Image (cartoon, rainbow, N blue to C red):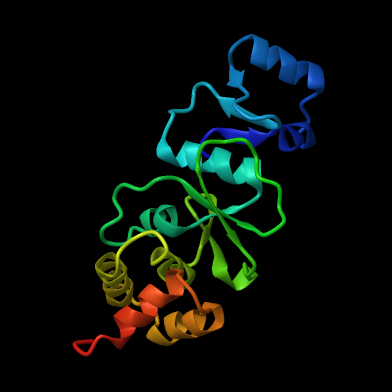
Length: 179
């Protein structure tokens, strides 16, 4: 997990509270958020920042962060973005947070050891944070790499709702006459 572990996982692996305190005092581990430990020897990366975010919140990486992890065209740089089910308490960390009423297990996968929205769900969500051309670029890349257009449209239909949201952008892109 990019040098990040929960205190609960460390204790389940056999470390005692005294050993954890000693490791923090000696500088081997830091604790950026209550309940998490970060190995100081691990490089501080964007992936580590995202690991801290998902472990602190219990959410999943989404939107531009998911597009970056899936290596979709146009998302070489992205902020760490996490989606949480409505009602879940947000941790005090500095990342972009999104709430959703619909986070189906079928919409979640794992990339680089991190929970992330699937490519289809990511394409639906992207329109909430980027323009239609960026959504189209990511869609075209996903299709070129073998993602099923049926899977993408089925996910869009399941998540589509009225109002300003990500599904509207993907719907507009798919309805373009030149597609």
